[in-house]
Length: 427
Image (cartoon, rainbow, N blue to C red):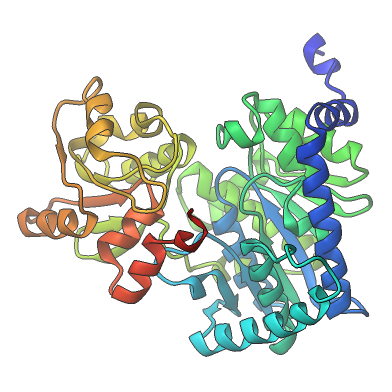
């Protein structure tokens, strides 16, 4: 064994990391304890839904959607909580594959608000629920209301310190570990594996489709947590491919992982029947929203690479026009490098919430690609591209869910609220 791998001691490394960042960790752990108390107050006998937690750099939303669809063929009711949404907050909540209604959201929020306010009245006035905590409680309320047997809960970022750790799970799932959120999860691959695989629980089955460099770190970390680790093997991926035909590898892995999780609990299920149930893709993932227009919410280099694979597979030899935006401090040259060989033209636009300056982004990307244009307003950029789109040409919108929302959201009220998220908190 590689000596450096042999020196990888997950529990010791986590202990040191928490010692070195004791204030940050203490706040996270206190908030999770506080959140668990609220959950126990609202559901003193435990929540009736069997919950599955899922995290990963890529594919977690898609696997969540596959799990929700696949579990329905067992005759059970399934639901999911995923993110981010693109146009409408209600997109985050699904029951049996269907998005919940706006009235469902209103009633769930009112119920949770009243119940949590009663609980919070015993605490200092500065304590409040966070954005993800509100979403989790609303999801649990909806699961109970609709008598959901199986609920899929997607981690937003990381794993070990996420709000979902306040909930009991019957299974934990990790798709893969890539190069995402280095400032939050760590600059090294093993650090990100420590965080994501930190969702593992003692005695709870832990599933992963990680088959690359991070696999060792993931398995060691989950085993150190006392979890039963189950991985997918190439022969299982090949078996799925025989049934559905030639498909990009990342999608085959996602489907194989979802099938493995479901068949762990329902081993009698036929693989072909299970795959047949997983027909729908998550909204915003390689979605045709208009003739010759594809939307994909890929926003980091790993996800963009998968988008490039999907484009090459679906349209071999074709070049595309890309309308892109980018948020936070991501490096545009790194993020979009995988699509440059497929691009004939790139239009850079704004991304509203946390978006980077399009003109500065263009200056950077010009070092690698010549045919770049800038239009600051996403909606205007999209409308201009539609007007000049020739027959047989394909326009791809990607890089930021916020940009896609601003470009094509048909609801002006939601579009404005999405673009100005957090404005009341700004001083």
